[in-house]
Length: 137
Image (cartoon, rainbow, N blue to C red; front, side, top):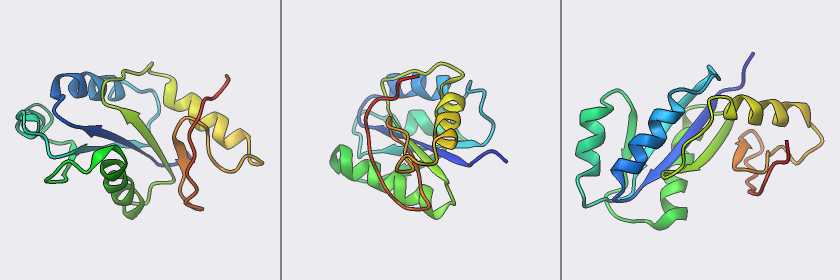
């Protein structure tokens, strides 16, 4: 069975880039994921744009700018409460290759001796251990 992955995208006053990021995520070839979009207190109309263009997407509003770490924590807590086995943090100005998540999960699953984290913010949640870095594939 494919592990459930939550993809947390943090937005702050950058809805155009964030929409491009989400569009690329929606083209992923990995089937068991959901996107958690966190708006970090934007003042540029981002929330309204997201609700209009992406009405079915899970959108959390922090109400104020909590900074990168604070906003990501909101999304990760929500993902954990929803049963995510992995969380992928992705910058809102990034776009991804359709095979990116499949490759990340494959590497994580094939390396059980690693500290249960793929080093590009794809993190298994059963041990709640967080790390970040680069994967050589």
